[in-house]
Length: 227
Image (cartoon, rainbow, N blue to C red; front, side):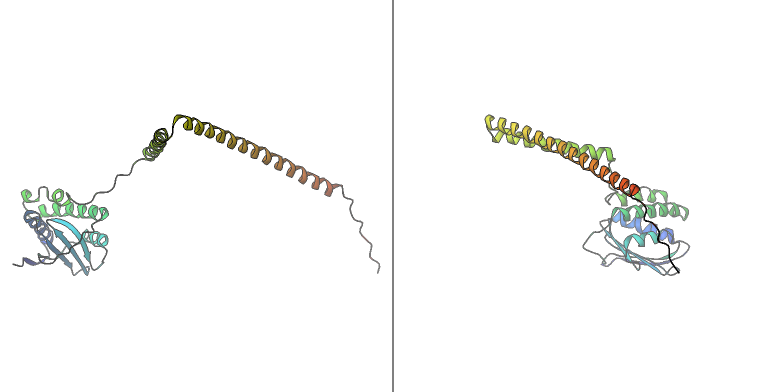
């Protein structure tokens, strides 16, 4: 049997929305909770599956914008339809955070408008229980440490692989070759540094020579014009 509730609410808007969410929680309901606000010309559809929010849409389309708009509503029409469902979930942690703020607001106003505190108890926590949370961002120092740790583990794994795959004589040859290669690279770096210094020195001498030539060049006499 289709379970549909449709209520026009003004003064008791907060109570109606809160009671609808309490029924969804208590019955582990699935369906669409629709809220229409004629003052702001707004419409919000909140889809639930086993009392878990799985999708939000409305006239603003973007779920995050719809939830943000709900925070400002103070009256509206509330309707729950158990036969209107979706077969996917796309709630983000950003949407979940706004949903949590809305639930906290409803709990406060619900108590003011006569909703029993025993029914309100744990409403937000229970409806938020299985929603995505904001990822924990590690400090840069920890990330760098983990990166260095992975590099060390990789080097150790490569060393163990070489030790298992090659006999001792070949490992010694490989070690000597690595040392020679490192020494050769170091010598190339030093040689490149010396060449760079020489080029810089010659460039300075050339600029100085050109400057001296310009200064020592005699000035060209000015020819007198005859009328």
